Length: 63
Image (cartoon, rainbow, N blue to C red; front, side, top):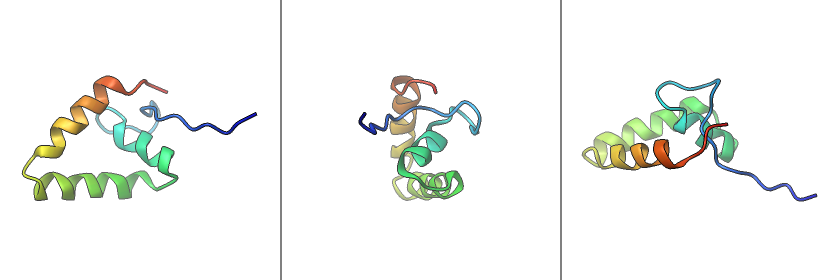
């Protein structure tokens, strides 16, 4: 069997839509680190990351 990882939104560890927690699970990272990186990227990219988050919340399936 292959160990294929799929990107999903988290149902149990979510703050808004579960995108950051799902991405952290996919990358084997702590969800808090991914959330902090998202917030830093949001302010440094002048809100451009918000559109990416919204698209991921719509497109990424729930766990």
